[in-house]
Length: 470
Image (tube, rainbow, N blue to C red; front, side, top):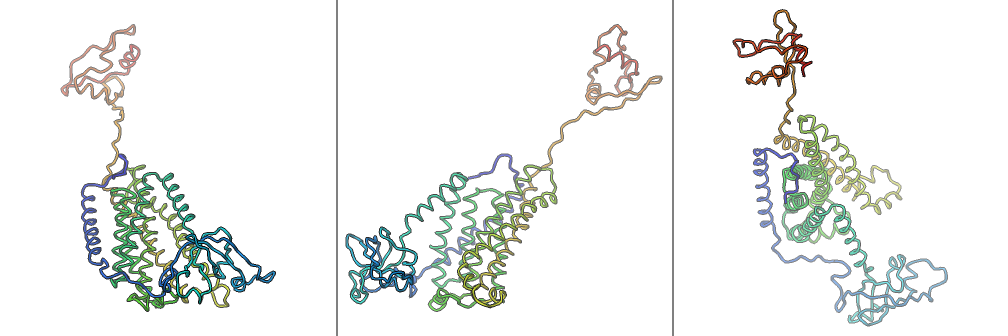
């Protein structure tokens, strides 16, 4: 599964050995943590679950199709959803059985029409049927088909653009989801240390997802170590800021439920959320930055350490700017409803961002951004050291150098090429000795050799005659 090209720079054997010595303990500790923290208790069920859980006796959830809508009892021009929910009569059919349907005001406002398939609570076999006054109660729309279609489109686009590497990335994404829902969340509900569970989960996801998507190479290992350093910095900073800013208060119904019915604390939950958020962003920037270093080194292997780091950081600075925007707007999008409500209140903007849930979101944005910014130069520096350890300066091609030859008495100094000098020193005749006699006169007869074994230097006239004879 080595996906690097033959011309890609490789680290020296010593550096590879050092990286392996750091990687093996990380994997061993991760596996050990997985076994030690694995949830051992029974599955924990929380009170006040979703609409399809903790239902009344004899009640089940099912799917039905709306067959009729009768709004004849509503006053003409009535627009209040609360009133229309009471005066509109719906009929639905499920499992071959037709019955009355109650649609909630928010669903009625969204629009429930004939032919829609919806999820409902089925009271037809419940002893509370008479009290409810209806056979079915609306839960939500059935979105299985559109969401499955969107997931398939997403997978197809990834495969078309990224090919086999995209397939490996999708497999890694599925593995990450399995780690979260099979290990991390159950272990937190089982009472295991939440932050430690999250660190083990993040480490396991990093190792498998990175090597699966990008191959086993020193480039991927460099990105892995950069991500680990970024996660450590993000976790430490997140724990410190959560404690300093006193964020351990439940501001939502979900928060109240977890704090009241489990051993989880809001401080731990917030730190874990920051770690998981930072993991996704750090994976992105570290692998991109490591790739930038390797590509620059392959294109210009003669670059020195400082030059390679400086050019790679130009790419890193652009990545920092764009990714900081990504984190910020991702949080803004997730909290858009809260922002709309808050903007309608007459309170200072500073108070808006320092009170309640918004303070948690702001701290998360800033902590993840700091971890991201620090991880980029760390990954770049580590990548430069690794890639330069295996680079050798390119060989320079042999060049022809003219060697001045001293003139004999009465003549002038001439030049011989390095090839001629080498030939003479090897005992082979130079070009001038091989030239035949011409009309300008015979070539210079071979004279006695000097004590060094070399022929006497040629005069300017002899050199001219040699050139004419050629």
